[in-house]
Image (cartoon, rainbow, N blue to C red; front, side):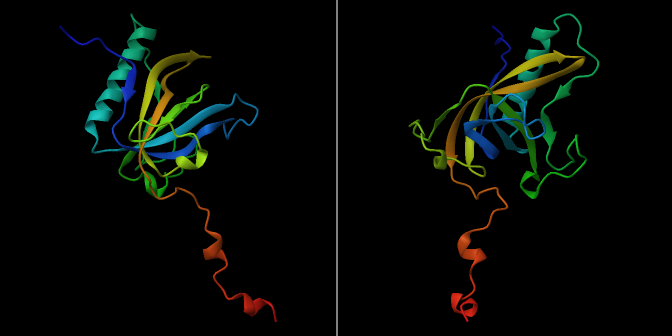
Length: 184
């Protein structure tokens, strides 16, 4: 018996970027917009199993939304990190090279657990740059003639610490000069 098409995906090991998992935020390009919990995930191009699940979930969402006739143009949230951003034409950051990039969000706060499935309750327990598995659900939309497939953020399982993805430097690095030089 064939397995039923599903819109749910649980990824392999991905890297979190722009992780706002404990506090909902409005979109950067629309500060008055609806606040959501969100993250971008960096999916290694070598993770063909996760990529196949994402593509199958996209197709399931398309079939559910438009059962008789597939629209000619459909936008997707899976982008090539070796390419450029659709909206700005700027290249993705160095951390995106060799990966696919996908933004996911939800109105509901995701469940967040560690490798042993213990709840992470402090916001400093997971950050942009950490490695995780993510559950998400594909859904198709048709808003004002814009048709596409997005993914809603489900839950997050932290797998390992990663180097923080931030341009912020440490206070120790910023003030490495000897204080006596300035007290003259």
